[in-house]
Structures are given as structure tokens and as C-alpha cells.
Image 1 (cartoon, one colour):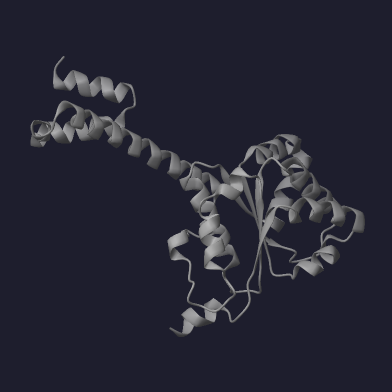
Image 2 (cartoon, helix red, strand yellow):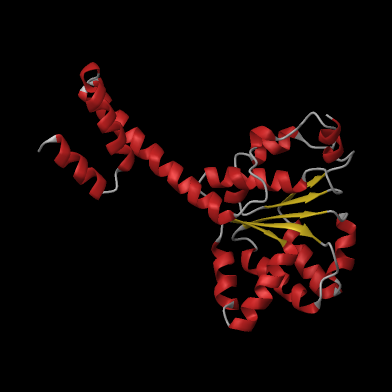
Length: 244
């Protein structure tokens, strides 16, 4: 089988990484400088890298992160009570394997959403399915889903995701519909999947925002147990970078 036929079959089998490197090796004669085992290893690695990058791109695109953040971009110099050791532990994503949660609390401008995005990106890099949603917008989307009959399908879809990131929780008190939706989301994920929640509100004020004591107890019980809590303080990073 000649080179053209080989390339055609590789493309038909969707081995694009393999085909790309095979073409390059033929063009520059690299295969003459390596053993057969080394050539095969090089081709297989190229295909593996290509598939990993495509999957990573799909996961990040579907997650719809607020920021294109990475763990390596987190600022540990700014004084905001951010524990570097904890963040390094979280970067392993073992907490997702253990079905644990992360709660990030702090005032505006301290980088809560950036940290959540960075953790989400890290999860995508390790192959986890992630979704990132502003809390209020997600509630609005779910209300629309109830109206058009797709609510159960949407809830089931979210339940299957490895990591749900709810950003800006508690900007305004929840109504009864929102309370019940949040409870259903967390109930479906409790002990099965992981959730990150960011909020400007101190944790002690979450009861008031949720509103109904019984439902608040149920929601917080599902969040607090087996959760990592990050409580940021200090000056706004927006002002810091604005003045730099």
C-alpha cells in the first residue's frame, strides 16, 4: 500500500494526529533516524495528544467558563487569605473523585469567579465534564425549561455532570421556586457529584437568602458536609491591577 493510500485510510479512521506526524516524518525522512519501536511510539503519542486536545477543547467549550483561567495564573502574592497548599491539593481533582464540594466566599473583586474557573479548567484537563453557570441565570433557564416541558431533561443532564459551578449565589433572596430548584439540584448531586459555589455573602447569612428554614437546612446540609471552604478577604484585586 503506497503512502497516499495509507494517508487516506488514516483520515477515514479519523486518526488525524497519527496522519499529521506520519506525513511530517515522510517529508523530512525522520523515520530513518529512529527504530521501528520509536517511530510507532512517536505516532501513537501524536494521536493520543491530538485526541486529548480535541476532548479538552470540547469540555471547555461546553463548560462556558466566565474566565479563561488556569491554576498557574492564580495570584498568591496578593493578601486575600488564599491558602496555596489547599489550592495545590484541589488541583489534583481528588476532591471530585471523592464527590466533595468547594465553597468560595469573599467580597467583590477578590477573584472568586476566577478561582472557580481555574478549578473548572483543571477538572476539564483531567477529563471531567463541567458546567459553569451564574446562579440567577441558571434559575431563569430552569424556569423556562419548566414552561416548555424540558425541565426534567435539563435537571437530569446537570445531575450527570462531574462538576457544577454555581457563581454569585445569594445576590438576592431566593423565591420559593428557586429554593426548590436549588434543593433538587443539590439533592441529585449529593454524594454522587461535586459542586462549587461562589458567594459574596458570609456563610452565616445564607439561611436568610434561602429564606425557608426547613429548605435552608436541607440545602446547607448537602453542601457543608465534605466541603472545602475558601473565605477570601482583603482589598479588591481589581483596584490593584487598575493601579499597576
